[in-house]
Length: 402
Image (cartoon, rainbow, N blue to C red; front, side, top):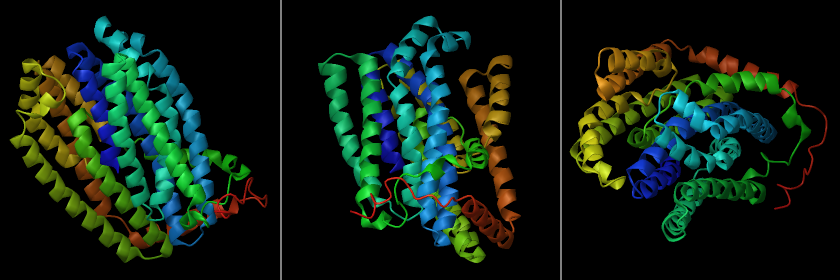
């Protein structure tokens, strides 16, 4: 599902890239320099729902899942407002950061069309986590697949036939994300599987927001920014991350520490194997991958030259945290600009950051007391349950009538 959704962004970049090198640079900068930050922030903050809903579902406190979903959506929509301001002023921001005025201007046109996408993210990620906590995955996958097919058709019509270029490409991407949101919410409201977990809109969504914000903010710093091909690889890891998080949360909520421990290491082993396989595939196709995005030989040669570094980076992306920002980015700047190693130096710094984050998280996982985690999960559930009011949810009968 995550890979399918990411393919929408990737296909938008492909459509833009075949308009010309300037358009490719603008779409790449918009996607990887600006949009991916919003994506990572929203996905990270939405991960709080994954933890809380998973634990509540494991503890059979089903009514709390809908409340967590709504609280997260409220917070993420509020977070989207300052992000929209950043998008609106993307051109002067990019110029200030050293980007050429021509590319910054083109990138800002692309980014303007992505403003509606911010708020689609704000609702989509809590919905996804809400469904995943109940092991409801296939409906989202079907919705994403159908939306991808429609997205490809609309992108072709809008970009090439209607001639709307970069702005048209990004507006279609925003529309596609809103279609996913609408379809998933319709499923939640109408499906019998969500009858006990979605009981309608409630004012309780606006209570306890500060504590929820702290948990969401802690989750948000766990996801670093990524590049296009690297991001595609990362989406596979995000899928494993979601599966592991749901499984571990369910087991912690149900009071099964050994099962939680086993789930963590199984997913880590499988994710490592997948990373190795993908690295081999990328290395074998290094001379051909870039032609998906552009016909330029210069870009193609640069991508082929950097692919080995990407493969090293991919191994560590199954352990996302803020080390890549605190260590990788400064180290990359030092190697790239001070020691004149260019792009290879920047990627080298990112690899250093991801290696550090992998080591830290492995150490933390090895030292985790799973019995204590079960106790903490139970305390958290009781804390959130105590915040519930006696008010009846608004539109309470929506989910049960279907």
